[in-house]
Image 1 (cartoon, one colour):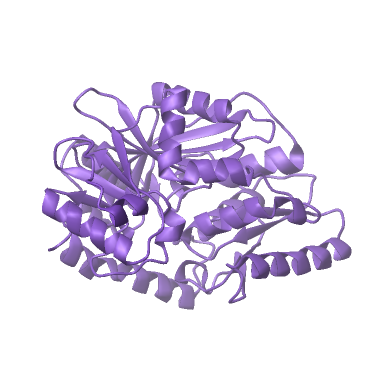
Image 2 (cartoon, rainbow, N blue to C red):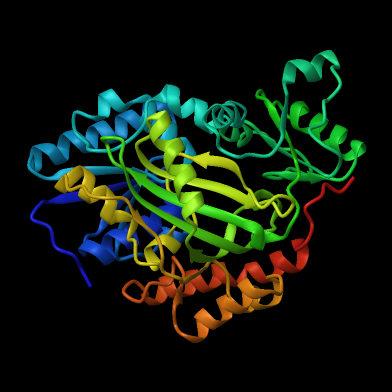
Length: 417
């Protein structure tokens, strides 16, 4: 059912990936509006769509290109319709950073909710994020850092715990430019040889930042949790939605990306995250990853993304449409008590046979299969109001590519040496 509003607005999405399509679908489901998406490269999830119009500029991911494209768009659209709100929604880490850096310039034409670049930098850099966690009482794994300077000087690596340990770059944006054999988004390392070789490869590829070494929290994918929230411009938390992933992507470049999530509720997690967000002065969409530690029953927070996540459409499926909170805050300026996700629904980002074959057996998988039988499930890209022939074929081609990916990569989290 489409909601109504007396205010006119135009969503302008920064990105062309599945995150952008999920937001476009949320806007279309809630308000019947067609979104605009801007990016530097066309990606499959937003191709051949009737609910999102895509514009590509090869320089859009650069500072100059970003400001140029948006300034031209803002001037033109404000002149054509000065009473319409242009809502900017970043749908990726790089675009969040660009929007934060150029907030003052773009605020002349666009409406958006974005933290300043100083707070953004402290949150997206995992080393400083964990220091904030320590300061504000947010549970996280035991953590050590290792810098490029320490690597060059030959400083021994201090371990956070016994092996296995988890390793990931502190600066995920800078890591995007680093390419080398065996590159993964994150690593689980079983011994010192794997650790030393992985560190050598990362720094030899030119990575400039720190590396994060952490105590590996045991358990399969079903121990993970993902939390979406929206914080109003006045700093009050409007919405929180918790999901329980039961399967992750295992392709080397995509490890850690969820492909199946059952929405759930946990008041203790909600309270802890809410306190943290309000204490640091956060505003806008936010996405947390965490894992239930079976050793003590605590949820260990792994990272914060200053945007909605690529799998965040599970929140819309569970009844808390993502677009609604931004419109209520920025366009309608309507506020109230925090709304917490309580409904159970299943979001999938891969074909159901992959879920049935590769998800770990247990209560969560049984619940997911029951939700499928009850029809309480969905995906981001298969939207019944946006399934023209070309789009349908492209989406099926995308989904079929997961079968060989899982046959090749499932269960392989270690670096092959």
